[in-house]
Amino acid sequence: MSLSCLIVEDEPMARKLLTQYVEKVPGLTLSGALSSPIAALDFMKDKQPDVLFLDVQMPEITGIELLKILQRKPIVVLTTAYSEYAIEGYELDVTDYLLKPVTFDRFLKCVEKIHQRLVPGA
Image (tube, rainbow, N blue to C red; front, side, top):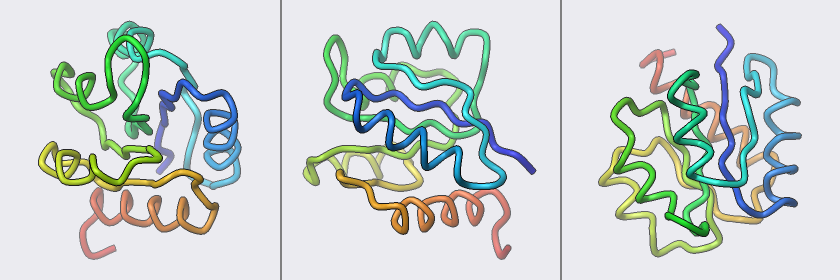
């Protein structure tokens, strides 16, 4: 089963790194890598990703605000350099919380959590 992934990250280097990680992992397909939460709202009108890697601190609106706006939520993984958003993220039922800089081994653990959420006991 291949999971479509959308990355919403305003920092170019972090967006590039997450893109490379998604492309390395079998079973993950990159649907898009966007720098703006507003662009993500527009993107998700037509395409609903299975997994959303979402930065917290962004211009215009935060990742948390975007998450609250979404009617249909995919599996969400918050990505941020700030640990203080973890509690609010989990209250919004995110699957994981990746602290930047994200290492590849930590990314792989996140992917395993996603699979566990989709198929409990797998």
